[in-house]
Length: 193
Image (tube, rainbow, N blue to C red; front, side, top):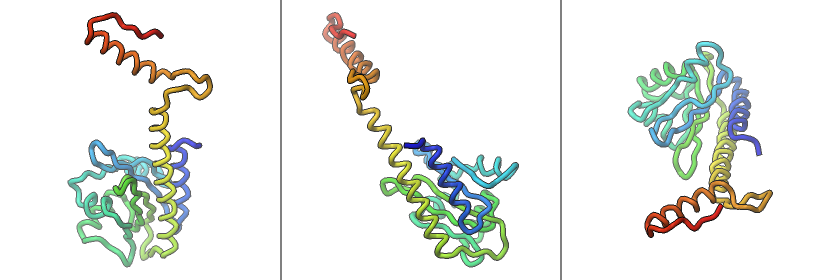
């Protein structure tokens, strides 16, 4: 029953405690522009926070196509790297030396990316870190899907639950239909409010 923003913020805050991470973040896909933008950052302060909150990953970037938009997790640590130029781009953009990021799926498509990271030298993520981040990402997916379903239900409801009367959106829609009908048949509107 909590607001989506509060749920997302709590999940990102809790995920920061995995693997002694300095920073946790949540990137969300903007479906219209097909970009990822930073929604929530936890742990970063000052300039680093401002920098991370301004991060946008566009489809033309290799990070988008080879790291974030894939259907698998991304691990950057002492034993795991992307291609040399891609690792440098990622580290510059996110200002992290180690990163573990998990895609969040809705309807078979990456809707968001949950990530944790730090700036330690010689760091390595464990299998437990990966499994726990996966659990957090699935909880975020459930929260986002519940929010989407809840808003759809609100749009579909035509009666107020408390009074049993037709709601504002239903009445407005019906009134518009009747006005169109009256104009089409050139007669006075018969709808009474």
